[in-house]
Amino acid sequence: MENILWLDEETLRARIGVCRRADGMSVGDIEAALADAEGYAAEAEAEVRQPSPGRPSFMPDPEVEAADCAARVAEWRHVLDLTRAQNWESYVPARDEVGSRCAADYESWRQSVLTRARETEQRQRDAVHELNADIRLNATIGRRIRSLSLSQRYGITPEQLLTQLAGQAVMTGDGTVAVEPFTPS
View 1 (tube, rainbow, N blue to C red):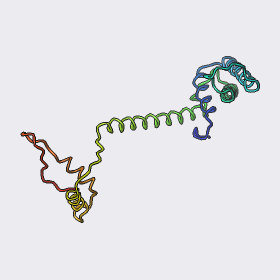
View 2 (tube, rainbow, N blue to C red):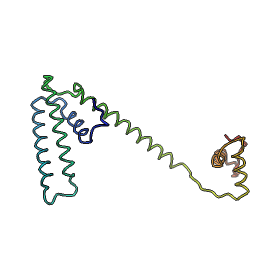
View 3 (cartoon, helix red, strand yellow):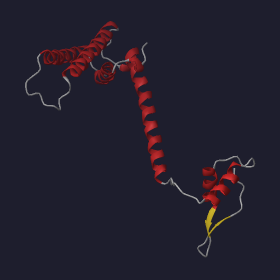
View 4 (cartoon, rainbow, N blue to C red):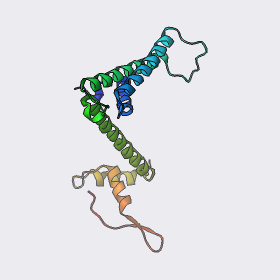
């Protein structure tokens, strides 16, 4: 069975939409929906062959619309053929191996997209509180930071040492800033 990642966008949209819409429909209802889809497909094909003058720019591309309509017709035919072949009174997506697999794959994909979006949003919220500073140190302090950080003892970068120093800084009661002794890591 095909994975949704290998389906073209029109087929995927059509399969998911038709399976959802057909849920619980009788054979007669499915036949009517197929007839409607075929009518829309014929109109879309006619629009591709001879575009209407003055077509608004916000309307979808006629070729994309025709491909969408053709995919919906194919899916309605699949649903009708399956419902007839299995002698079902009504279509139930859970009994349709192709439709239910597609719906499950789609739901899995959708959840992964939502998870990635939440993670990205969290990283952006966290980044608001980050400080990215470009500082210039005089030569003496720069050499001291480099020698401390790059020594065999610690083996960290100067930036990591400065980050750790800032992390250890505390404000004392009299308003001065102090750094307690610590071992860089």
